[in-house]
Structure formats: C-alpha cells, structure tokens
Length: 168
Image (cartoon, rainbow, N blue to C red):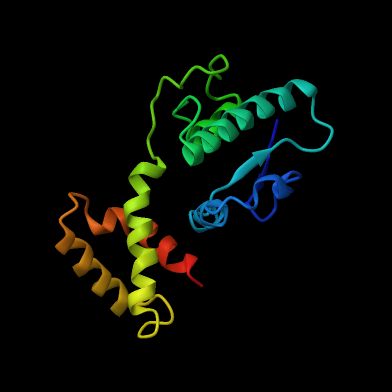
C-alpha cells in the first residue's frame, strides 16, 4: 500500500488544544518543521489493520514525547524514525511499555544544550543579527567551541538554529 507523505503543517492534530499550553510544544513543533520531518499516512479508506498499526506506532511516539517533557513514564527509546518504520510495518512494534530494541538515536537531553545556546544567543546578538546568516553562524561556532562541550558545532548547528529561531 502506498502511503501519503505529510509535513507537520499538513497534519490535523485533533487534540492539539490539550497540550498546546506546554511551554516546549512550540519548540518541538518548530524542531520537527525545521528537520523537514515527513509523516506517512494511509490513503482514506485503507484497511483497519493499517490504521491499528499506525495508531499503535503514534501512541508510542506520544508516550515518548510525554516522558521526554515530564520525566515521568517509561523511556521507550522511540524516535521519529522508529515511529515511521513501525507505522509502515517495516519495524516490529514492541509490546506496550517495552522499549525499542534499537535504543535511542536522538533525544531531548542531547539536543537541549544546543537549543538553549541558540535561544540565549538570540537575546545577546538578536539586535546585531536580526536574521540567521553566515556571520552569525561563524560567531556562534566560535562561542560553542570555546565552551568545550565535547560536541562539534557542525553536529549541533541545526539545534542551535532551532533555538535561535524560537525567539522570533
């Protein structure tokens, strides 16, 4: 079955009002948008079995997001790529509450320092650099490298930019 490819802006999030008030919701949505993440959905009228698989994959993703934001619940090591593969039937969905065997490839704990750095940099340099550009990028790279975080700026540039753009 061919699945439709959707962006975050193409999705209809029916219960968005229920969690829109969470402070990091807009940051997370912007991160998904900036990453150009794609979601796959079956065409209208597809078999119920497909919906059940998609529903369970999305439920795991929802549980992981809730755990990431509240530090309550079980870390399922559910990444967006796991959700997509599970929804498409390319990866087995573990039983409820059981973590993925593959482990986490990307998590908020890893991204947060770089997003925070970009967020804070806007407060310091926002009037000098109203938009993201090469000069700003070089300045932030020098500052990041001086912090000696153990992570290369080129590996966190995207997260820094998300933090910066969150201030707009």
